[in-house]
Figure 1 (cartoon, protein in one colour):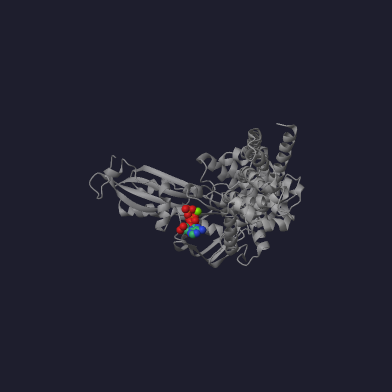
Figure 2: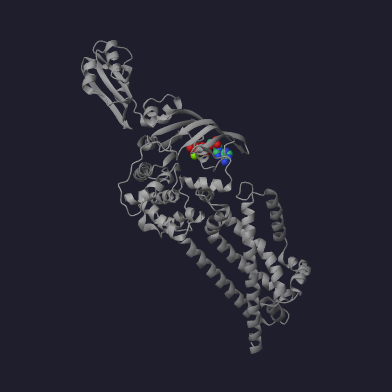
Length: 380
Length: 217
Ligand SMILES: Nc1ncnc2c1ncn2[C@@H]1O[C@H](COP(=O)(O)OP(=O)(O)OP(=O)(O)O)[C@@H](O)[C@H]1O
Ligand SMILES: [Mg+2]
């Protein structure tokens, strides 16, 4: 994956300026804070009702949402919450019944066929089951968007090579998809989506059919694409770890409605909506199994207070300050602190000997939220 | 068998080849667009036209419902209009094509329908227009099935061409009936059957081979 390949595959607004073939410039990193016009999506009261045989189904209910340029935007929610419906309105595979969707600030509902085709070249998409054409080689699959766009053959060939190099499949151009592994197939899918140099990449459960290790390599590739090419990525996943791993922002859908949205560190650090909490359950650790039965509801002589200190986006917890605040011996029972986008997020379970309310206040002043879980024998 | 008889058999064999070959060609040229229409004009298809879809579907079913031997006779005025005659190889090609086209179209339709909707969606998502979808997705992806269906069509047309022979179209069926059935010449009958079997086997073998090649990739 040479920097050169990345340079020339840059999203339109950028590659015009930066595409200098033959100049092996250091790949410029596009940060999310950099102001860009290309690659934004905005949903304005977008609703979608399907008319099925069993009656109307409301899949989206007045969704208002902004996806900033350069973001990796995660969509989560229970099965049937409307995630796919939302994603598919961005390239008009699905049309909102009311409300509208704006890509780069322009409403897309009025586009004619030519406009729609042009839009879809700016918005790539990858799928859970890859959706590769079995009758075409890897090269044929990746070339199709350019062929359909009527590009001259030499340019098609050059750009296909470039896209395959980008996803690390240089040697597989003449292979048929049936001979590839799942991870390789998804790489072909990514190359096919990127060969038109889009500004936005839509991923509908793109790693759900892959094993954990392959999932990681595909996520790394997506993150690389986002960083180096500045492509906005909107992705749906059922794996919260995927969101935590690569997303900058997340939206939680519930029966077609946005129930929570924001930067991942905040939503994951302090989930507010019950649905978000339920979805995050697999990531959170409960009480240690051996501790739970010994937990007493009331203090008694010789017990220590068990406190859960939840960090949601502060600086990394300072352990000596913590011990000083407690003022008495502190034992760390369990801890799971993650770093999400530079924020410390997670929970610590400590046993504090003879902790009074003022000790809790002092601890709270350190920045976490404190919850008294119960009491255990001091020597536990 | 006399040399004349061998000559006659050879001529009949060539007639059968021409009848089946030309009709099969027509069935492909007309049947594939017909099948594409039936699949894509459905509600929710890429060229939705539900009314036209129903009308064409009904006509196709109508032709499929009529037994070939009846079609052969019923089409006589049409055959005369097209070829100027009602006997001979070329006259047989008309009913043969008319009967094979809807048959093949239905078989091709099944294969086209089996193309994963996700592939069409993926093609749409990369900016393919509808004709690209026909050309790059539907037809190539359904090709193995269509080819298998074509083999079936040709084999059943070889049988039908023998029936056409019965009403004066020439070909192997004609020889079998005239010499084998009416003059009790069992040698000729056996020879015709042997040639037909060989022909059908060859067609089936070639068809299967081609399908296997396509599927192997
Ligand atoms: N083409 C359709 N016709 C009718 N109903 C549909 C259609 N597509 C989706 N729905 C319905 O709309 C609702 C939202 O579906 P959607 O596919 O957007 O959910 P999702 O969040 O992607 O679910 P999953 O996680 O299972 O993929 C569901 O109730 C679904 O049954
Ligand atoms: Mg879905």
